Amino acid sequence: MTPTNTIDVYNLKPGYRYQFRVAARNRFGWSQPVAAKEYVDVFEPKCLPEFCQPLPGQTRVLLRHSATLQCHVRITNFRCFYEIK
Image (cartoon, rainbow, N blue to C red; front, side):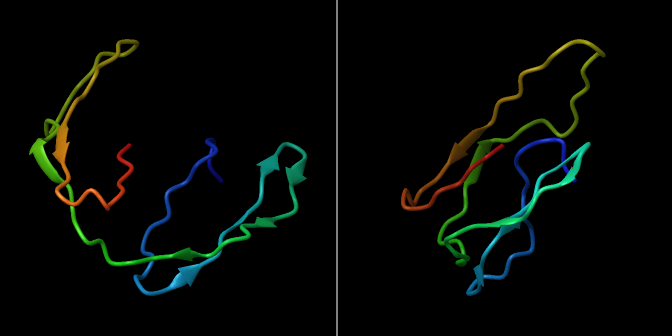
């Protein structure tokens, strides 16, 4: 169970197709699962991002304060798509 409406999926194998099924849960119980209509094909990445200025290795922030972290990424093959969170 996750408190957000997104989840990261790991360890998917290249060359396989996946179909995802999602169910919601709240204080009343579970919803009926809903399956995605489309399959997701997983491929080997054709390029990887290059971190020109990486994030610092360790950052501390005082309680009830905020911090902004910034990194620079270069992608040489623009046909690739990366979502960096």
